[in-house]
Image 1: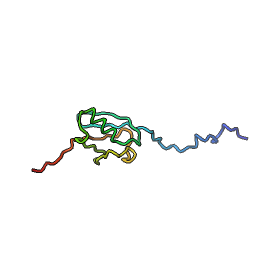
Image 2 (image 1 turned 90 degrees about the vertical axis):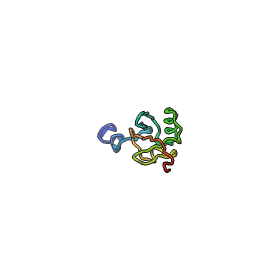
Image 3 (image 1 turned 30 degrees about the horizontal axis):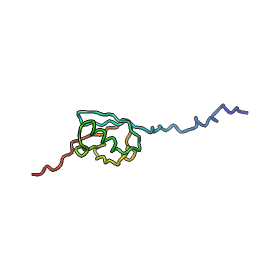
Length: 101
């Protein structure tokens, strides 16, 4: 008769070894002059991160365009909706209005 602590009767050892997704991500935001790192939850709207970056840089949020993998980031987006991973980077560019004479 096997004892309860022997063999593969341990439930924790039988769990699949998938990588754990942590609740928080470290996201780098860069405008090619400055890099700022943020730790945010996967479900947090990126508006909070975007506003915080603009405030630190002394820019109005309307002046900045945020991109992730070449796609524009909208304020209601979250890391989960964009399928972001820990260590990903958001690029910030100057918003350009007009241009035609």
